[in-house]
Every structure is written in C-alpha cells, then in structure tokens.
Image 1 (cartoon, helix red, strand yellow):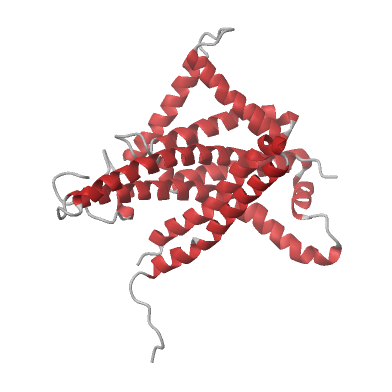
Image 2: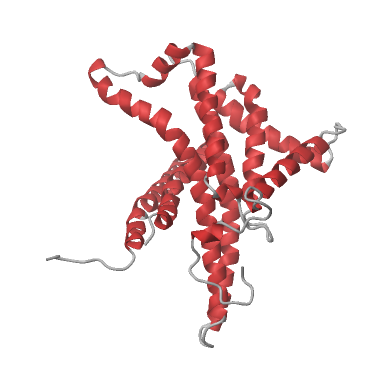
Length: 253
Length: 74
C-alpha cells in the first residue's frame, strides 16, 4: 500500500477492501477470523491442560478473563443464575477483543469488525439469545407482555408500547452491531489518515517535512487511544448483552 | 433563483453538526462522575462501570457520525 508510488490521501473506504488472496471467498478477513478462532481455541485448551493449584501464567490469564466475565459481567447483571452464561460471555469477550486487537497489531492492521457483517452476526446471536431465554422462561405471550408493557397508567400505554417495542426489539441489535463496527471503522480510518498524511508530508516541500514527525507522533498516540477503545468496546458489547439477558430473566414486581 | 448555495463537501458540515451532541454528552457524564465522587468519595468505585458504559454508548453516536460521513459520500 505504501510502496513506491505516491500514497493517495485522504484514505477512502477502499482501504477496507484489500484484494482477495485465493478465490473470491478467501480474503484477508476470512483468514483473520480463522486465525482468531484458532488462537482462542488453542489458548484456552492449552491453559487448562494440566491445571495446578498455583496457576501457571497462561492458566492465570485464562482464569482471570473467565473470572472477570463471571463476577463483573454475568453475576452483576444477571444475578446468581448468571454462571450459566459466563462461558459464552468469556468466549464473546475474548473473540471481540482479539479481532479488535488485529486492528493495531503491525503487519495485520485490519480488524475484522470493521466490516459490518461480523458485528451483525454477533449482535444477531445476542438478540436471538435474550429473546429465546425470555420466551423459554416465561412462555411466548407472557414474555412479550412483560417486555412491552411498562408499569404505567392505561392512557399513556398507546404511546409507551410502540416506544418499548422499538427500543427493545428493533434498536438493540442495530446499535449493538453499529457501535462495534463504527468504533473499529473510525479507529482504523483515523490511524490511516495520520499515517498516510505523514508519508504525504514527507514527500512534499522541505518546509512541511518536519510536520510529518508530528503526524507520526499523533498516529502513535492515537494507537494507544485505539487500544483503550478496543478493550472498552469488547467490554461494552459483553456487558450490554448480559444486561439484555438479565432484563429478559428479571422477575418484575 | 437560489437564495444561498452550499458547495463543497456537505457531509463535512453534517459531521460537524453531528459532533455537537456527543461532545456535550461525554462532558455531562464525566462532570457527574466527578461531582458524585466529590460529594461521596467511597462511591467512586461503585459508579466507575457506569462511566465506562455511558462513555461507550455516547461515543457510539459520535463515531456513527464519522462512519456515515463516508457512507453518504461527497
């Protein structure tokens, strides 16, 4: 991309569509998803191969991730039955964290979550999950009655029920996927702007060449910010999913 | 006859307008966290998860502005 010819600036959406590697379906994105799944499976299997009382480093890391998801996510948002979901939340958190991290690892520098398809699938899984859990616990009609009828006097219900329906069943999957996608897309775009801008500045007049150092320094600073955003977005996705599941399971009044 | 004409990138103007709301929102979130911690310092640990959740939810709107700036072209 930054080979001999002049890098085009500003970066466009075409940045996100690198040429296919082998056939129409094997692109950088599919390879990255396979890589993420492989790394996670191997990591968690190896970490628990021979568990000891005094944990090794890899075992401690895996247990910390699971403990964080069980205590601070599942038990906090769902209550004591949250332990059933802790394994799924750990997997979801690790997968989103790893695929987001691919966005700042040099050499890869492309998060698979910057194509909206992948966050859409994750959000649809969360959406189907909280509806299914609610319907399984309460029955079909009773769950929708519980979800759509807020405790309010009867004369405002015609206003509140469409709002509840819209916000619970239409907006939730859209915002879950769009939030993750937009964060990864915008993060990569900002890093591309400052990095490509640095290269373009390096190739311009002598007065502007020192500004390229500022541009690269900005790119480094924004990479650290992007790291923070990556962890935060993985945490937010998981905590919102657990909040929705907890809301579906909650005993109202 | 057109009264006024805007040329150039309209999506840049749109993004600028879209950045007002989340800017105020993030300011309100952190202002309330700082104030609540000033009133009762022991609650700082308890309310910290809500700071992060609120930040991510509000920041999403700001980033939707950046992303749709490219989607709507111009």
